[in-house]
Amino acid sequence: MRPTLLASDLHLSPERPALASAFRTFCAGPARNAAAVYLLGDLFDWWIGDDQLRDPFDAAVAEAIAGVVRAGVPVHVAHGNRDFMLGAEFAASTGIAFLPEQAVVDLGGTPTLVSHGDELCTGDVDYQRYRARMRDPATQRRLRRLPGFVRRWLARRLRARSRDATSLKPESILDVDDGAVAGAFRRFGVARMIHGHTHRPATHHVDVDGSPRVRIVLPDWCETARYLEVDERGARVRDVPGAQA
Amino acid sequence: MKKVRLDTTLGAVVLELDDANAPATVANFLQYVADGHYDDTLFHRVIPGFMVQGGGFAPGMNQKRTRAPVANEAGNGLKNRKYTVAMARTGEPHSATAQFFINVADNDFLDYKGPSPQGWGYCVFGKVVEGSDVVDAIAKVPTGSSGFHQDVPRSDVVIRKAEAIA
Image 1 (cartoon, rainbow over the protein chains, first blue to last red):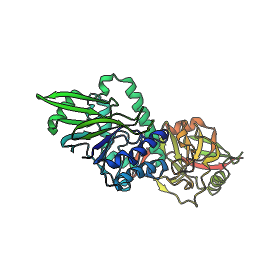
Image 2 (cartoon, one colour):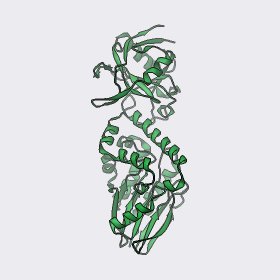
Image 3 (spheres, each protein chain N blue to C red):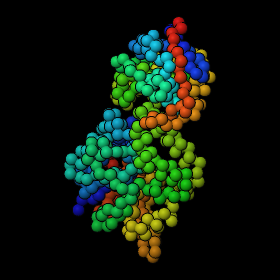
Image 4 (cartoon, chains in turn red, purple):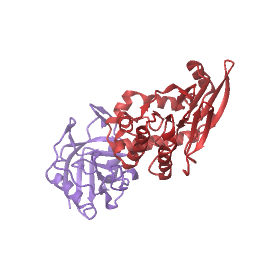
């Protein structure tokens, strides 16, 4: 059976062309032989509106994804905290389908909860407040009405604030909250969860209500371009061939 | 170099225009000045820490008619530094008409990077040589939403008159 591939926190941006090149390699190679591809948030380092598609860099990323879809491989995209403005035009130009905030999907016969993962960081109250505001449709309508140069300024300010804020907080708050993880396992009744966001790739074995569960945190692309391959035999991390981030 | 004085409700601002590096943009701006276009227009978008924008709306947020757009000369090497003045535009690089903005911070992300829609940048064509304190005062006025517009000063900041002074 063909494996399903999952990646997150690629943070693609024109400032890091090698990453984009690794992503194109991923799309032209492994992704086309997959059963499906899941991009679980922060594909782009920033996305302030689908008019970014008119930029050659972003258009090239979209075209790489469209190539995977044209090859007959479904591509599912979750919104991250940096690219929460990815919208209908992006979906139409690539052929991707957006995932809801949390979704249960069948991966190699195992029902698996997939999400970006920031919704699990409930210990960071300021962040959750910001997140709720940014995901509010009214806020997004207001943002879309802003002229491009204002949105770019805003994106930079939000990024800078995110960097400042994270550097000042204790480590524990930036990771997922154990209670939120247990709650999600209970609510969705699954034995496996896969998410990104924290940049702390690992496989965690946890016990919830007496039954074993697995939580896989996807690797970010800050150092190396890596993705998760899942099939009926299990899950393993793979390097994008020849990739240097 | 040519200078233009903006007589605003918060004081006078003098702009020195760099016609050596942005000839078409400066000529375009001076034509609007000569036509009296900027007289009784608003600073209608004020974002502290970023920029103050004006030159397109009469009080009541009524958009004024403009001439054809001017070519984008952002590749002239001038940078969007604090207290420089640059042309506002839509997402299309060569769409600037009358609206301009004064940077109130170093906004290097607005500089020309290359001839792509996102890389064209915003054309700097002059700088504030008198009245930077007035610019600071404009940047500090309270703002809110007005119809579809955001970051609009709650009480009008008006350019009463714009005139070429040298």
